[in-house]
Image 1: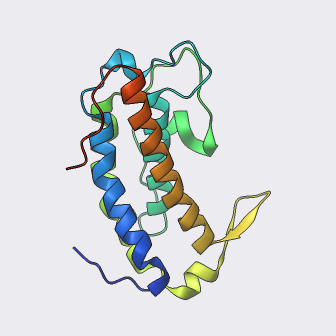
Image 2: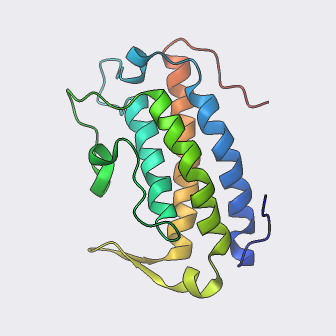
Length: 164
């Protein structure tokens, strides 16, 4: 697996990216279909929305080098849609299949981003930011969502995530 990045600035981010790639499946392991959509009578995002949102983020990241790829739940997450009540979200198996399909493509995008690209601006309409800041935020958000999934495991009565 390629460990040399086009920019020294993304070397540590690649390490975190690789950790998150494995942790995602471990965070979802064994959670029932019913519990994936359980909000525990709160307004919190349920595990199915969290998982799909994270998968969508990787598809967006991969769009730099592999445009046109879409996840199974694309319509539920495109344009940064929030959680929707009364919607059946994709299954854990669908999310994991999409994750396994897109992670190598997103990793390739991260490896190939050079300083020129990292310094260029990403236009989100109302807001613009350098690609480097966007990638840093995405890596932070991956850790955050995996942490939320780990917390949901415990709140729903499942064993803690197994990192080893």
